[in-house]
Length: 479
Ligand SMILES: [Zn+2]
Image (cartoon, rainbow, N blue to C red; front, side, top):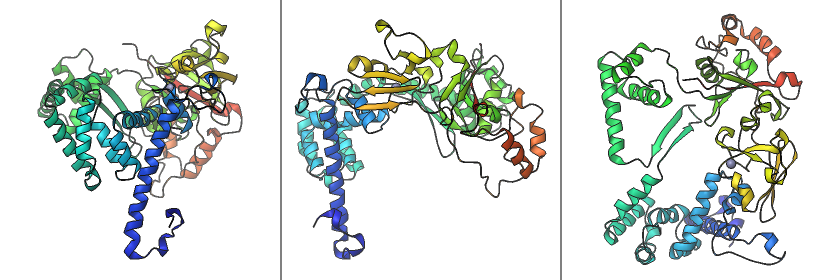
């Protein structure tokens, strides 16, 4: 019987386990086919080199292949690279694993595990074949953990120098990342691929400083103090200070100058009149009080930019574009699905300067290191109306991008029952000069009156343009 035709509530108890297992095999098969499809797509000869009904595949993937997959399946560039990388690895180097995956005998997680461990840059084809022959047949009976242990043991047995080489390769790929936890709104900064001895030395120094600070009376757990030290050493607050001065600064809670960050916040929100979320560029959305505090901390010396947006939150006009198009109204790279910030992108000329394109708003948009070169890899780009970018892929597919809106359409605030007594208003710590003198009045106002006040200045979509004024505060504190 066909799986899709089965009705769950009618499957006899004696068979329901078989049906669930059959679905798992089916899913593995589908996952494998999707990956194989990606390899074929990334190797399909561009249309301009081929007749309409012809089939043509290159031996390796085109450089634009991952961009096409990202746009087609609305994946981030990173996810598209990861999927295509997995697909190519299985297709080109692990045929035995791919066959088992396609037959539904192993699932995606196990196929992934084989790829993780069997790196063709490190192991010869013969070594990989031996490991696969020994482990693929039994893999359906092991968990991913059990499989990983078996792979690792087999590799160390077959090639004792493997771990040393692998460590060297990982160090070459070292980097730092910052991401937002959407549940708690806190951020995590981490570094990967560090040489273990240097990482241990860094942690030892952090531990020693934290212990000294606590002995000297710094409040908080060792973990909290370590985190404060870690952040302060990275964001520049402790720049030029000796260790004893760092600890004094930590205990004294003195306000030190740190690196500036780009904050996107509505003018009424900045003034403490509403609680719309703001955004820290490159990190993500943050609550109104966090955005206000970030602005307040770096007001001195910061530069201000404003953007007027339309009812969909897209840029209509921005004062800063006149002098600095590079950091213009497009918050993100204009590549399909790309979230890299404009500040980390190059200015792309929709019509290249070599072909007569000017550096004007209507012919410019930020493109990241990944999407900027796509135009030299067979993609065509046009900008039929300012701010709307039309990408045509080498396979003839068309993707329109506009970048993420500056102003998002958000639900009206509906504070929870227990959040009463004016708590919707900015905390007293919000000390932006524009809000000065107002928070106290707002904090004592009754909720119904607050709503009335807020409604008078609330930024709403699709009313008048003057109500859509946003401040993009790009403050770079001078050192
Ligand atoms: Zn991009």
